[in-house]
Image (cartoon, rainbow, N blue to C red; front, side, top):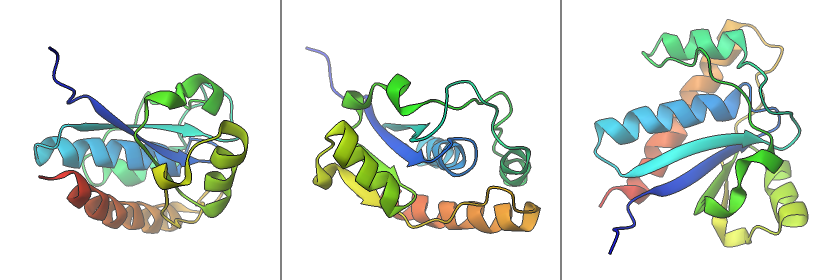
Length: 145
């Protein structure tokens, strides 16, 4: 019988070009380094699939050794949301949309409260990245056993 260690979580934001791709990459990097068998993916509530990640997100992550080049957005409709055991939403509005339109159970959703850096300068993105790093450290604790 196959062991079920392919657990998958999702980070959710609006466009999937700033916050959630950063969170996905940061989580996967930290999970790997800590031997946590959970993979993160990400998608956007209001986006289309295939848009490039924002330049400032790429730069902010590169500064901490995480490569986002070549990462592209995924729309919620293309994500296959039934595979995720938990959804980490950047804001309350993302959580509402998941519950209302995609019938995700509230207990499968956590809201991180990370504001959108879209349109901001690199400092705004660095601040956002650091908030994500802190959130991811907390999230990882739940999966380390």
